[in-house]
Image (cartoon, rainbow, N blue to C red; front, side, top):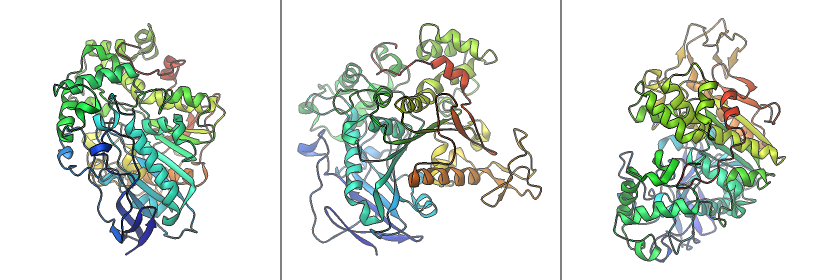
Length: 528
């Protein structure tokens, strides 16, 4: 059984498929009691050897997706991390990937099967780290007597643990890349803007960056609504003794029917996000990065083509979006006083559902991701851009290249957890040698027959794409280059992940022009 000494004591993991795997290592003290709603504090040292073979409990979190995780997490030992390593040799100096999960800053846990680090660590020869951080009211509510952005401070504490301990697991603390998707990508973007995170990583991968960062005014109003569900005030004094599960339910109730005064956040039922507080997070990532806050960090960012489609399906609106709903979405989300008109002129062929999905996708994920790349190159930093365009075969293929599809592909976990919905029965297999785009130029990738190969066998497109994306992500972690030209303001080179894939100018040019000049300021209680 592998053993490693970390700063707080000795941990014992186990060997799995040739990797040393450690689960549930505490990186900060439990945020309970006098630590409730406080910044993370150091772990108390332990004597002897601590077993690190099981994931730590999930943090208290929303039950909107049906999982009763909040009631499982009753001992407060939520701030733990997990490590997969190909070599427990301090001299190995392997690149390190640190994953931050998504979930709207309200749900998520590192124990989900799609976040298992085995494929990335083993195939890419990297040390892979995942961890839990506080969510919802516990992590992001604006409470009197508590620091804002406690979830982000947890992430900094996890990265500090990596800096201080990862060499013992075979990792190079000077070659750390942080990566995340959705709210995890928003967290990565926030870390790029945070002085407290400076120097903790040299690379950053932001997959589908949400543009939702709260003003203090909006965050305070949301917290007031959450506390009011319990007849309390949004203060540490009032909430410190409230059962975490009860606080989760109060947050869910407040966000379920948000007041009209929450503007765009209310329209999208977004209750929690990082707060631009002037301290932990001095400014939005776009402004901070453009000013040079992350000039020395290499950035890889991008999005899926059809970000909104999954949410449309979850709302039961596929094929049901009305002209009125599309008009409301354009009025609420499109930039500037003439944004709705510009969308209709730019996409004259689009019906109500297409317009609805375009403006939601652009506002929430696609344009914020692009803007982060723009900000980095404006500061003379280095950035790479991608779009995942391959349509998911799950649910009869109606989801397209939807939000979250990149997660199983990047991790290589194609048959468990979320991938069961998106990838179905590992569909996307073809044996006819045909191709959706008629491009016969690509031959063979990773030994699997591709379109144009006259020896074509059935192709598992998910496996092909997963191999490519894992290779790109691990190459980026190793030397800061994922394998295609860097993004620049004039060329806008973009890796298009599809079967076959390509490098081309940014493919969503019509939306880019609509959003040109919009810098995604903090959300307020009114429309932007």
